[in-house]
Amino acid sequence: MNKKNLKKIIEQCIYYEEYGKFTDCLTILHHLTKQYPKVSYFYHLAQVYYKNKNPDLTLKFINEAVLTQPKHKKSWFLIKGVFYEDQGKLNEAEQMYLKALDIDYDHFDSRIQLISLYFYKYKDYQETIKQCEFVFSYKKFEYTKKKKCRTSFMWLYALWAPLYKSYIYSHQYKQAIKIINHKKQTINFMSVEIKEDFFRREDKILFKLYYLLNDKKKLDEITYLWKHYYKVSDKYIKGMKLDADQNYITHINPKNYDIDIF
Image 1 (tube, rainbow, N blue to C red):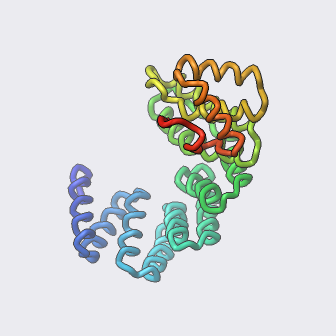
Image 2 (image 1 turned 45 degrees about the vertical axis):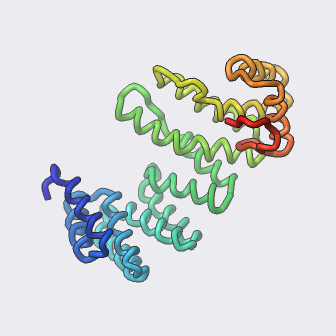
């Protein structure tokens, strides 16, 4: 397979998949993964087995791949975890992600999949915090070279929201503020031009957190921002306070506002 023709090969594979020609699709994908062992191709291969409505065969195929392709074992553990998670077998999924991370603790897909599992499925905010903070503890985010900058942002965008939301849901408001401000400062530093209202969501959460912490100085500062930059009314300010009182911190209660909500 010529690398220049990869796009056409994948399009052909998708065509076979759409029309139920799974044997033809699998043949292409097996050749593709052998020559270009990318996790996305492995995942597509496992998906085709799964779409063939044969979960046992899917699992058998993944287990064989773990044994026969040791160089890509972490990717197969990841795929196996996603397969289990899709079936609602969350404990098994967690173990697979942890196995992948035992091989490579810095494996992005496995780490983020594990964090998402803890945050969205288990709603285990302490474990989410632990996993996110672990990445922050060892990883040096760099912004000088284009490739390293892209990698850094990939990690940060995946970490920021589950981390600050977990702090909020755990009532650790000061820690949440630190993460939100870190996000704003990093994006401001890296972006030549920030669109108007780019940080509106973050500033809304910060307003509510300063209000709940009774931090008068910071609350006055961000109230000024809302009135003079976002140009909202006193009723809108009151609406945000009502949100905070009702524990609507990361989202809003429309009943607390007038017609326009952003």
